Length: 187
Picture 1 (tube, rainbow, N blue to C red):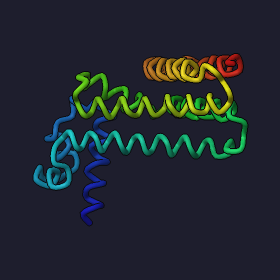
Picture 2 (tube, rainbow, N blue to C red):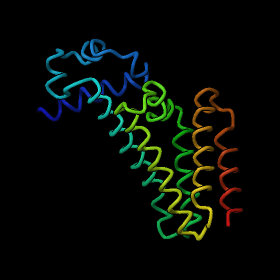
Picture 3 (cartoon, rainbow, N blue to C red):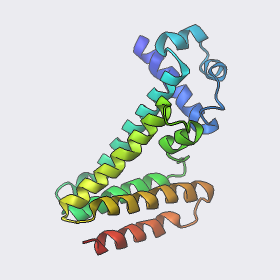
């Protein structure tokens, strides 16, 4: 029961953070929406910051599960194809009509201070994504693996913003084509 209540509160908070933004969502709004007392929320989350960090971890886990599920068929493919499959899986995530921007990107905007734990957790996700792409590029014997990973990150993040601001703009299709061109041209 305790785990269910914790997950329920986290789910309500996550939905609110996505819909309204993290800073715009007060603890009062969360408890009102969840129909629980503040003391109940604080029983499971010692602070709003802890709740936010759990939200980001949940988002991160969900994103990597989605990416993994979409890449399953490419596990035995050559590394370049795996890299493109990773980028395309992320682009498919961005193309989803429910996509409201990457939680980690949104969090770094709302918590821009380097020493903030929310900011640090968000940066960690972005670094993990970039390192994963760099490793796949290195596995493909691409000498400029880190540069390619940075370029692909720029495409992904730019596409996320463009698609969020202008649904159906064609940004995802163009980004997939740019990524393919970069990966194929990389040496």
